[in-house]
Picture 1: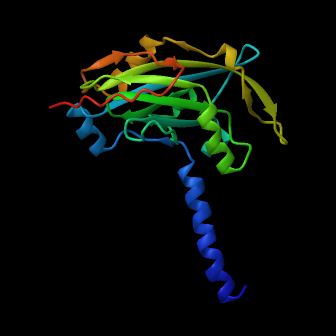
Picture 2: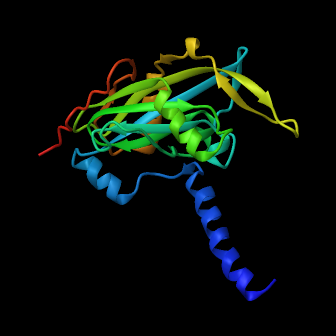
Picture 3: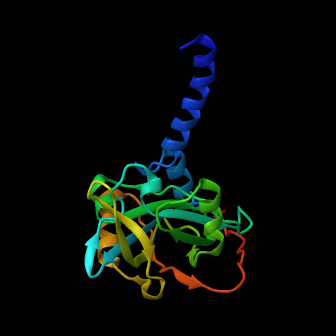
Length: 220
């Protein structure tokens, strides 16, 4: 390979790696900066569980390393003018990830969550598909360290892959409901964030109609 070809190839490889790494789900605790904002009442840790079933059998939703092989998430709120943007979920541990738990660190106010099956189209088309996806509204109260927003139950249709594994082909949208696993959420909060005293359960609600932007009520 010539030096000129190498110079052209290396930037392309770098871009591909950035895309792959940015789409990977992460197992990590909130950062020191996050905790600073949380302790000042300007952010909250929002716990959500995703529970998938195919024909009555449980399906491990976060089974893949690359995020595009799992279901996709998009969030919008006051900061985005209601426009939805892809958001890679974070997980507190490998076990909570296996059990379907994820978390976001969000400011107080209304946030809108859209969820789509794994990407099977080009990136641009997939990004646009979130605009027509059903929305779930998260109402994040101020000065609350941890909020459990509910367990989103997603009945799915599976698709078999070439080497025997399976993935999610589609959701059965009429069967999607929000469940309350508050006891499990409280245990996770106590195990991972024993120093955060303020906890609330505020279940997400299906949103219909125009986006409502709620000005964040920040702590003094």
